[in-house]
Amino acid sequence: MFVSVLPAQAPPNPAPEPHPLQDAHQRVTLTASWFEQNWSTWFGIGLRILLIVVIALVLRTVIQRTITRLIDRMNRTAQAVDGTALGGLLVNAERRRQRSQAIGSVLRSVASFLVLGTAALMILSTFRINLAPLLASAGVAGVAIGFGARNLVTDFLSGVFMILEDQYGVGDNVDAGVASGEVVEVGLRVTKLRGDDGAIWYVRNGEVKRVGNLSQGWATAHVDVTVRPDEDLDRVRAKLVEVSRGLAADEPWNERLWGPVEVLGLDSVMLDSMVVHLSAKTMPGQSLSIERELRWRIKRAFDEAGIRIARRSPGQEDVPAADPADGVAPPSALAAPAEPAVPAPARPSTSK
Image (cartoon, rainbow, N blue to C red; front, side, top):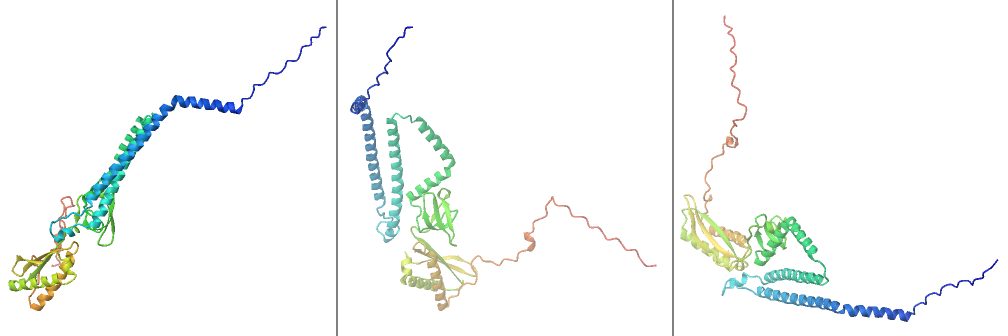
């Protein structure tokens, strides 16, 4: 037998481990080569983003300053009536300031949203992001929100124009059609009114079709004095003028009156009475108090002068008593017909 003795096969030599410094050098080399190949692209993107941001901020600042200048011009006190003391009282400086601040805040917010939103879309486009799906989704969402919240949009736009036109403000006494009372709060969507009974009414601005403001400008007080037809008109007129002058000289009525009380003359003449009409221009919201005080003083002055007041108001005639059958509806043709009357049977005679 031949026994071959072969030497044992030696295991393969393991690969030498890279040196940490060599590994770091290799990574730095790869990074440097990648940066050298793409630095121009990233530099251009960064420069474009920086330029977009700078232009957006500058444009936003310019627009906000322009809006601020326009609001400052609106905030200047306007003379409604030139050369008169009444003109200065028609415009409330504090109210104009609050209104201009609200308008400026809304306009600045809208301008910032538009400018910054456009800048954000432009920055996304620099990264080569397809904006078509985003814009299409935003358009569909806008249409859906527009149909679903059309009342909200109507209320908001009505509130903006209401503030721009200064139709009414806090503290005004208004008649909004659906409700009336004192304005407690004015918002872009809802206006709060406090009624005469203390109730708070929430009125949507889009539902207000007409507004009657009783607190702007001035008010007018009207008083009708009814006297007997046999009274001396010159004497009645003189007494009314005396009462009117006394009211205009006393406090606080002299401040609430913005003009003299005028005796306009006879408003109507009837067989049993005559009506003398008085009118005066007053401070807004003070016409009722002026009318009550004027009636009080006229009554006392007439009693002292012996001038008799008519017993009945003009147009108040003797009305006959109402017939109770007037409120009964006539019988309908569809109602059941009345049964004919059946004569009672004749009794047999008992005579023999």
